[in-house]
Length: 430
Image 1: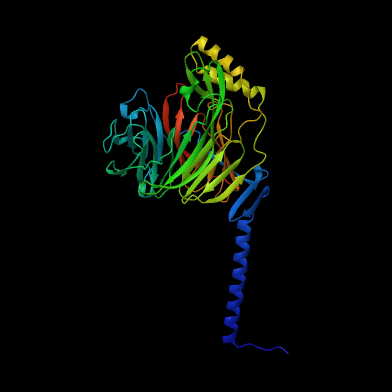
Image 2: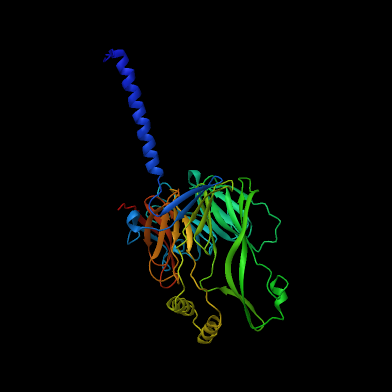
């Protein structure tokens, strides 16, 4: 027997069915959006998401495009002083298109219009409120606030976008015998992150360079130890992460001199912070750890097949690039002999460097034997750690600020003159 429902009963029943269908459809959408792509496996370990990228399939990712020519290019050795750069340590783009550049050579910060006209400057050498002794980093934080770090004074300066001084704060010391406290960057709320490096005990010495007077004509591999330090907004240490293995170097003990040079294909510790994420990864293997502002590990991205063997062509290319920068023939011969006598690693580092853009995506630069030959290539991973895109950037270019539709950074020309350039970024879906 079929029972007929009256209209007042039909309407609630239909509403319930529609709601249930909507919930099921929404749940399906969520499942689809959270599903890992081919070649990616995700597991949870005590609340930490571990993303294993077994294979990066190009057809499954996007290929983004950086414009062939910059829309803005700053830096001219023949122009006025305001357009000359000597050692750019940071460059950011404000929300209205203005560009802020920090120059460690002139110890000042300059603000340019969206078209590249110099509007105002902050700084100069000194210890006053708007002066610097070792300007080392620049950032844009909430409300287009400009923050700069002086490494010698261990001081953070806060400036408004119109070049007005807001305040400064000296960071607390940690009490450790630090060799160097270098800036990593700022979270968007203004909390700064530094990295402290120290040289480990030297074989045959007593832990410092002065103990090596009796050791001559030796080349010793060294690797620093790095601790990443998170400060609160009052400039007090809130969290310390590490220590980790840092950067590999070659310590050369000559006749009456001690020098430290780069190790060919040396491993390093890469650190970057932006928004609410701190990324840390040693280039020994493709394993990148993502932390929140409280120092809590949230995600690990791994790719076991990201390394390859060092070839003779890699060695020749690296050595040629190294020697080309030495004008003196005798010095070139000595340098060649030194590097030909050392053993090169069996494999190249898993990646070159890291960068976090303003959308939260992680850019991982592929390793190249030399810095200045060929386009710069990046692989981009989204907030979940999934492969998202491939990007090729200009040669001899280092990004300092990446937004949704632009890439700002520093490019050196063939004469090593620095230019701050803004490129358009097109995010293309296949």
